[in-house]
Image (cartoon, rainbow, N blue to C red; front, side, top):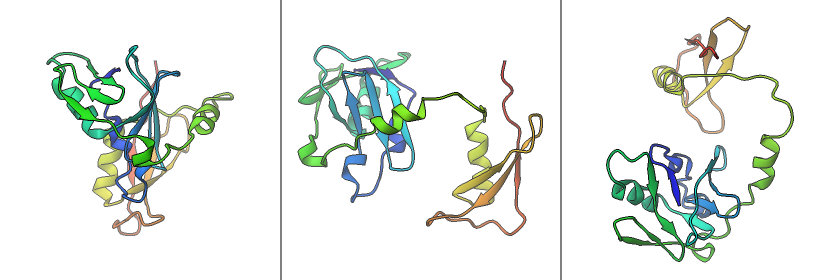
Length: 181
């Protein structure tokens, strides 16, 4: 399997010990996709698979080892994912099965329906700047107000379902969208 080295798909793995199937990504060899979700966010990333790869779980440890064993300057990390993970340097890691982590959720309905239909609106944001605003407000979640095509976005602290918000009443941020070409 070959995937972009700078894409940290494990960023959306669940850290909850009660959600074991979501603590690793799932390689779907037939579709050439590596899918990860924490139950709130989901990423579906095209990857190149090799003849020795097999569908199944891909762990955070395997992804990190693949990046580490890939030569400097390479844009893609590689590993073979079959009964075990085999790195380019020959090192191996065990590969969990659904017996260990239970069955990965069927994400086809979500991923297929998310890309259907006409696009009604596109919004381009600098994700790092949005995170900086959220951090500056002491909020783990934000609400974005969109007033017009050329207006900046108003970013408000938001709390819901256990997400913290330490911002005083009246706090807001401004974020300019990235203009398209």
